[in-house]
Image (tube, rainbow, N blue to C red; front, top):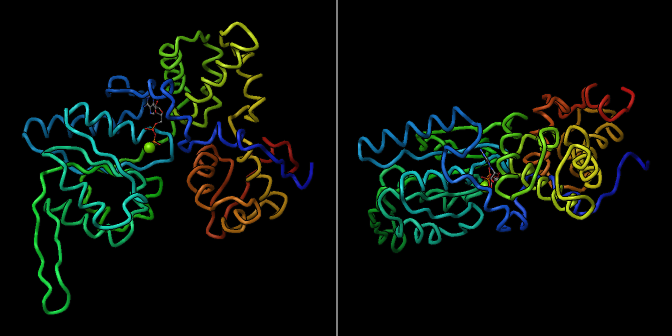
Length: 341
Ligand SMILES: Nc1ncnc2c1ncn2[C@@H]1O[C@H](COP(=O)(O)OP(=O)(O)O)[C@@H](O)[C@H]1O
Ligand SMILES: [Mg+2]
């Protein structure tokens, strides 16, 4: 091993990353997205909060409150916004923070929304500050303020909007300004899924994809999915392909083990990037504490990828610890990597 850094192909990096990839737009994968809360597995508290809010709004014949969904990628935020639009039978307009470059981009979308329609902004923490300021009156008073001319000639004109519902999704709620955060009536954080919930998701997806999987196979796949439905579905498809080419198309634990070894995914679901991250801290920084910027520079990865995609699950399973002086690798991770502490 050279410095503990293993090189990896971009393909390996991809398959078990929770980030949205082009392959997630395949019709196969899209067919797996739950269309109602009945089909939506887990996240019981969030689902109940949202169901109650939907029922109450229906009874009062009022639009829903604005909703902020927080959590790592692949846990079901976009899915929830589709489900809500379905359940209240309203239109859904989708955009993302980085796509809203100018105030005009946002105003154009807001003015075309109908009463009760859902306006979904993904990665809402990445909205430019100037654009964000148009959102405040839009969310609070259902209005946008246009300003004409400058200086003493400046006139402002208020344009009334229909009562729309904003759903914001973010992987990093800490980056949201407080005026924006405070304008959401409902705020929920999605957590990683239990193995039990992931088994349910894997079996449901297998049924839709018409692939046979036994209990041990489903259990193994669930255990290695980093608590993330998006990864579970992607791995299921990959293992199905493997079984079709090398075996008879059925999925068993032995086949999951063999297919995932090929992808560089280990017994607890850690990816090559996860292990490189841990090895970097161990080899270059004596196990830490070390700042995230230093880790990113050594790994030649974007800090955002490490913070949004890699670290949340490692923190969740106790393979990394965050202290005031930086990241530290605990004994548990040394044991897992079979490195002496
Ligand atoms: N609760 C769930 N039950 C079943 N499948 C889910 C659930 N949440 C997410 N998924 C699956 O995972 C995929 C990724 O979810 P998505 O909503 O796109 O995540 P996010 O927007 O949080 O990144 C979905 O397409 C869906 O197939
Ligand atoms: Mg999403």
